Image: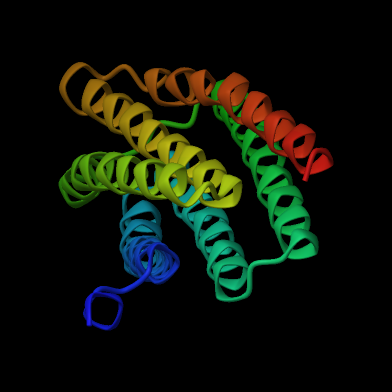
Length: 209
């Protein structure tokens, strides 16, 4: 009777893994939904304010959408080959992000592009900064419990997205209240090192899968 009423340890572990897997997928769907809505809002406000930084952040959101899609694909059918491919795709997204931000920031500084005020953009970036950090924390915790390097690597992509939102936010605030137009692209350069570092980490990790 005891054996029938109490599930085995294997069944308990399986249920726990399935629950964590579902949690990981929910986090990715939330990230995906937020960035789909955000990319539309930010690109519209960016074009209206003539802000290259806001339009650039919208393009960064597209990279995050791609990373989330890759992780959802990987979580839907975990295998060594999928894990390796997913890590390399995420690593490539990091490299694209770092390359884009560096070239975009330098171009903005050289052209001395002066964006207009965008309070809608400021509000959305502030919300994005907080939401992305919370989602990144959830992915890291869930990925660690699942022992899933893809989910943990994508958590770092989400952290980059949060930091980029924060840096662009600071740039917009300094431009709005002090007229420091150059603060926006300079703040974006902080993300370049982090992006390339994490991109390399993802590729190295994929070689050990």
